[in-house]
Length: 137
Image 1 (tube, rainbow, N blue to C red):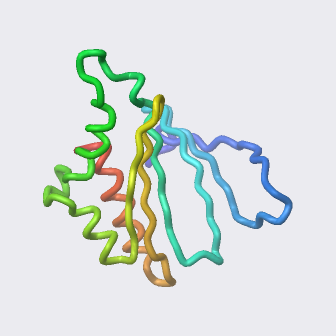
Image 2: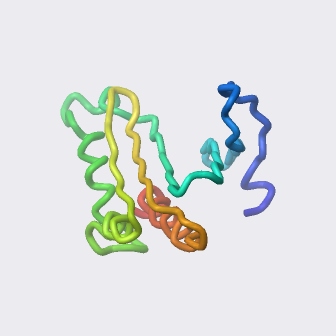
């Protein structure tokens, strides 16, 4: 990524006194995506969450349930990974799972998986697969 695509912004996080995890905040000006990275070296799990700020209240009165329907459709396959349930199969193989929910103003997608030492390639692949749900569904 070039400097133009990513902007590192310092944010003060209100943290409990015993929280020794590392936090980093990123903003992507091109699409206004905001990311909080949390690193916990003591954890054996990797996780990711995407909050799309569109929920059931954004549904057209003529098409109620569209946001929730879209939530389910997103996991079916992508341009890069066209096989149905490819993402879930990948996660299951790597000790993980995914889920999502739609509320009145948000739709949230998330996953977790094992992240033992030496599994960085699998974690990176999971992020590529997860990202493709949003970039090329």
